[in-house]
Image (cartoon, rainbow, N blue to C red; front, side):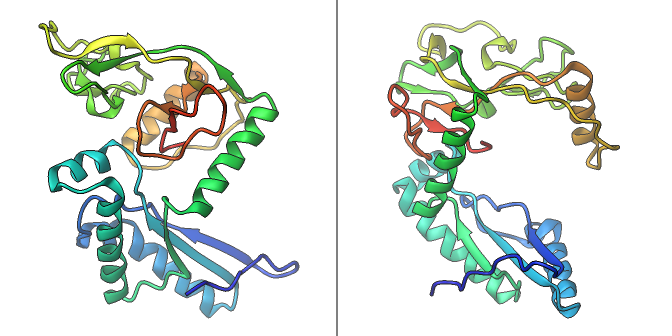
Length: 258
């Protein structure tokens, strides 16, 4: 049933709480609950006991290549897979009596409207720029390879398990084609232009306080502050995702972290 709108109230303590969105392509376990959902639920209950105007929201993270891959393994469409596992997640959290005010999902029309509206506002204010980028493509199946699923040696620090978007050891942002992945025999992924994607511009850097755990997050944050922010691609050449509402880019979707 629809959830009544809960809005900030002037003069009251208004608290918005959320936790990391669980990926929809698996069954939640105790680690998922203890790791983020339980602590957020505990704080939400405390806020309500203090009679603060509290809104606790969460939902399943349903876009991305991991969902497409799992759907292929199970012989389902991505939407069918998401529908199945969203129900599983909702039932598990209900059994544990996690007190969400709203447990939604990233594939709803409302989510699409919000994401596209944010994009249009950024575009109108000049925070986005257009550029081209090479990415890896499998000629056998005709699909572009998601950067997080490409692993190799970091060209900056030599870390052997860097991924195609960034190195978790030195914190450098990486293009997947920069990874050292060894020779590519015929039929293996080849680099090819993927058309002009959109990038998020470089906003002014602000004096942040000390970063918080985990250690790799502290290190990556320090690296970004030291080296400055670089433009980062916000579109992907996939079919499963929020469509980019702009002529010339309608065959692309937004990167899930946008």
